[in-house]
Image 1 (cartoon, rainbow, N blue to C red):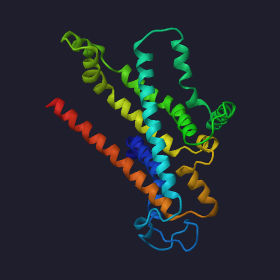
Image 2 (cartoon, rainbow, N blue to C red):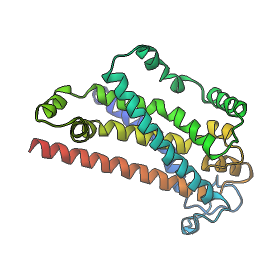
Image 3 (cartoon, rainbow, N blue to C red):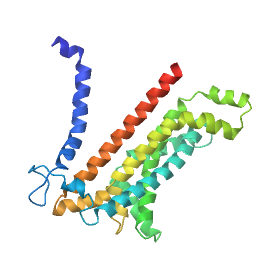
Length: 264
């Protein structure tokens, strides 16, 4: 009991981590399964067939490509807009700044189904045909809040004296921003971008309302679940999980090396 009290926080953290990773482990294991029927819910036998032919299911890779394109453009749009908004809210004083600061968090607090229905109503009233562009607009809108939050936290922690020192050394506004401000804010921008990409790629509710005949990967998975669950879905899920882990690990290694270089 004494050991447990001393290490309670560590044990709780490890249990929470295991709880979070367990679904990903199940997906990974069942990506090597060869089910007897249409549903990949019970382990039958080990097989690499799905990994050898990940696009063996009709229209799956097309929907995956579409989701990746949407996520990439939504990330780019939300990062550009979110970074500018974050700098404006932190660095400048203007009328309605407090109100805008509060409104930014509405998409995070609002239920997705409410936002999805509202956007659908807006697009229909404007006579806009549902499809790729309506989904992209919707994704940028709900990703924007998360990017602003991540970048704003980073900008608030920045030391303005570094930029003042750059200006004292005759650096122009563009040089100061590119060589001082942007590198310091880069971790927050990168975090916001990764979060936006994950949210856009994974979204189903808002996409389902505003996609029209467009089918993204989450919509394909939902539709497939009604008829069967191809093993290739687990393959794509495993690949995305491994890629995300590699990006995080690479980022951590780069950060640690920079810290060692700075202290050396």
